[in-house]
Image (cartoon, rainbow, N blue to C red; front, side):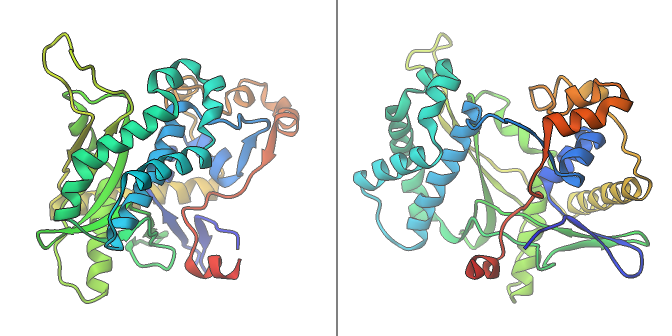
Length: 335
């Protein structure tokens, strides 16, 4: 089943299913958003191997999912379980390929031994505490494609929020979404980087809406951001203070902030609807060489004379799969 993040309704309005990642792309550059998410274009010959930080982030997501599914099931983790989880995640993300693609970062991380050590450290410093304090309600469960979270309707748009929080937990009778993040290193600014945010208030609002739809009268007002440093802190730093490898941020959002976030999301969707109608997408030229700390995939295309761009498109780009936030359970059962 093919997914589209927008549909034109019978009354002429545009129905949207959006998340923080989609809106981040649109805010960064409307033309990029058009080429990637409306036209679904992808450069030919994209590197099979992810950049090392992204690959480690994907591996960390895999191992955290395995850890907290174990906790949810009420089972104990053994040292053998930890090592097996690290190795299986390493293989599934093909991290050995990073030894060639990004040898310096791969060496600094410490190869597979570094991955096992990182997971063992997390077990000792964080997981054992969570085992006592957290009741895990959900692990990597998506929401929104069944229109569970409507953010608003205007004369031009109907907007639904979608997402897939890493965890939803109960701690001291407090329902809280949890998001896992990896960073290059933890510093004095790390915990402050998650507010303001588009992603975090989306999790907060959606958790409360879905819980109430199930009959639970709860107030959700914060996220837990579970942060891990890819770099092992120095044992004897020059400052004399050893930095942590794991830390947590707790961005909170009151009703006024959630309402402001909701209005902003709907307003962005109204702008996307306007772009779809006019086929006029604003071009942020300053983003071409600073697109998430790299060069934009479409810079070569947009550096070409407009009349020659169709030739570049045929030569250098292919039609990719539409962006898919997650799969509905029914789709998995249908195979």
